[in-house]
Length: 287
Image (tube, rainbow, N blue to C red; front, side):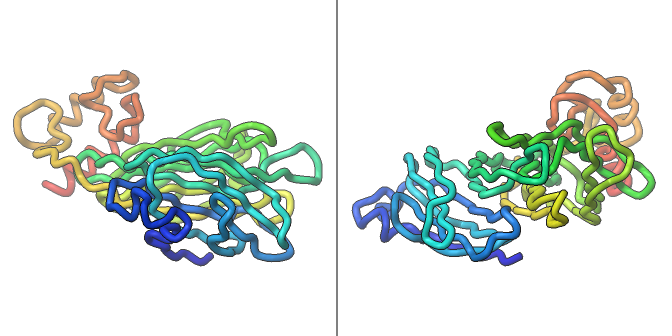
């Protein structure tokens, strides 16, 4: 995999009078190549103008564009193979990924998907995790593991031909090494594991399942986006006494299974074991 950055790469396409040239607020776009076994690199065009060539697992990030609507096209050996109309709002963060899709049988489909990424500030000293199913593979479940503790993160992620790829998260997580494992939906044996994914404070980490499971090219790519922190003074102080300690854990346990925002430290809408892991790390770290 190769990762590189193209800041303001499309200024020549947009012209000297564009919002980009005038220094207005822009959208940021990352482009990912997730299609395996192609005979040559693919070429990326925006509004009919060539931008760059790249290969399977390459990530091109940091493309700044004025907010607006663009025609994206992917060509292989000179022939258009994928195209999409992308509306990018100024100030937003987006990812376009050329990827494979799942079809019953030996063949796979291809598609060009656009995601809007959550680049908002992260609560407290946490990072953000997201996983997206953009591979030629049937429905998958995803687990997160720390040591001997494993929790199901999301069940039944799908990526059907003609449909939209689905994602797990985003959730906020402490800076600990998680093992992220993909399983066939309802199965017990993982098909791919990404060990030691450690969320970085004030950074959003996005995992993309790409390639083809039947053809043996299935892999996972990681994209990172800096977000900043929200400045919470005492993050994890659930009882309002100004400190984070075992008393806060008692409060969190009483909120298990609810949507109470007091205990929803990871921001996924429900109080679970993931929130307890965050709080325990905060208690140990400050003890």
